[in-house]
Image (cartoon, rainbow, N blue to C red; front, side):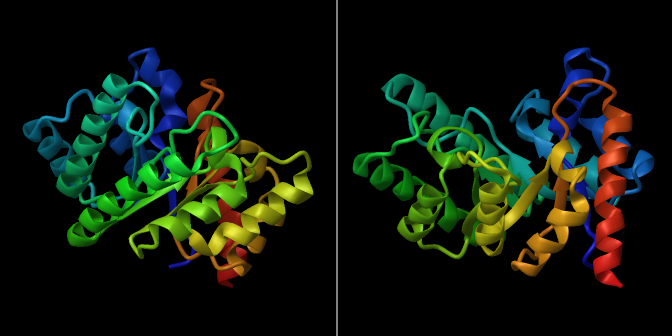
Length: 259
């Protein structure tokens, strides 16, 4: 169905920080406040990677008939200059992949890990090798891994294309964060979104882009995006109402497309 929607749990990081929401309350919110059949979990909501805890989340997903369309993993990127930090990040990545398999995730998002806008041949070689490893595991588990255009070199569209070519695996793709490109104009950012839409296995539409939903969503659909239409809120204020607005704006345009 075209208008499959999700809400990233990061949208409620303000409530999480105030201890007014946990992962189970988030699942309840998706199912009964917003009438969704999807979840989109940021690993900042996970208090453990122990199997028993993850199985409780899986039970909660199944009880609410929710599909985990994305597990968004911070602190797990495959590059760091410091070997000890890198070792810790690799351990988090391994835990996230295990969590994805227990929770039945359809996609798992990582960051690239390069803070600068420039990327070296050494970094490309090392990072692409790690993502090939993750993609092989994902293929065996029936899900996909993806890199978000999030910070640093990942916000350059040429770097995203370079990584797609270097990894060269059908189980590797992009989490398209609409408009989050290292460009100086909205026109160029929109063009990058449309150019990369067919490579995206998941996406996040932040509030400024939900406000332009009538412009951006038909263009992304026409450019070949076929995944779940995910939204994400960032302000940490009035999160329930802001998310409701974003979902309504996206649903309105997707209904038009479906008609």
